[in-house]
Image (cartoon, rainbow, N blue to C red; front, side, top):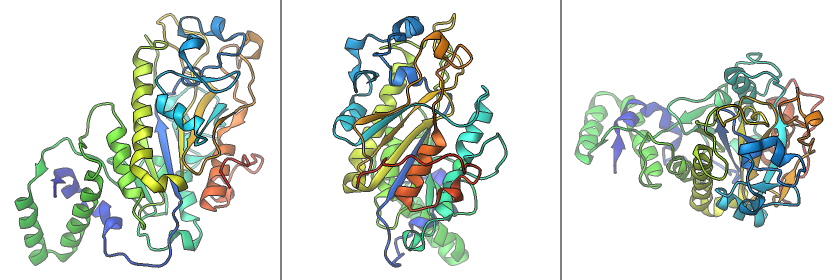
Length: 387
């Protein structure tokens, strides 16, 4: 069994994966949150090709309708989302459009803070909404787990910080320690430091689980290896209830491209990552919800550098075997000049918290007030899930 050096250093974070756990009944429900950092252009991801103002409003960023993947009479997916489109057609994926958090300014840092805390204003809370939801899980859903959440990162992002116990795991760029080295460390710690020996055993077990995804190394833009690792943990009977995956590179101020280009390449990587997650989850996919979200959208019109700037309304994706998909959920505001926010952005008509509250309530069985305490006026979206 291979073991990365970073896992040796961070051995204590892997304690939830000790295979000796054998507690009571557990839930099969799983939640994955994919955070796209940088402000993904929702008008490029899910172009409203049926909006009469679309082509003129987007200019050089407009996609040809014939090259997009049709969703309905108004919306399509970017052609690089082949796997996501297949999930949509199978009823396992939905698009949420013209959505945003309550934040209406244009700072990445502030917007991401609101996205992850579930608050109304930046820095109003110091814990994440997902951690709060995990902390409030019904007892039968948390039974048998030492940690309820997992960040596929070197440290837990804000969305997972709080009182609920969570773990982290990430691939290492360093060479693996060989089997002999691991055995010697096991022997040394076993004789000198039983606590560290237990942590090392946990780390070895965790690394072995993740490495079932094969080919994992840090670096590069691909997230498929990371989502494959997430699947290995999530499909364990007593694995984490929720996992968080992050992907950067969405701040496309210049040379964004339309059907091809840097943004299209990011879409392809994201699409591959989502497909890998579905494939590796196997039967667990049936009881899984995946939320793909970003901190804000982009401006409608291109800028002088053939990119677009920080905006407001964005697109989000819901997918998974538990999702009632095959539809676009949107109160579409339109792209005509008099329909835009501040004359430049897609106007947000769906509060993203309403979507998240619907998922937390119906999938995790948690009162939305526990995760989003400052949003009494925001009603959860009903009917997001099957059954």
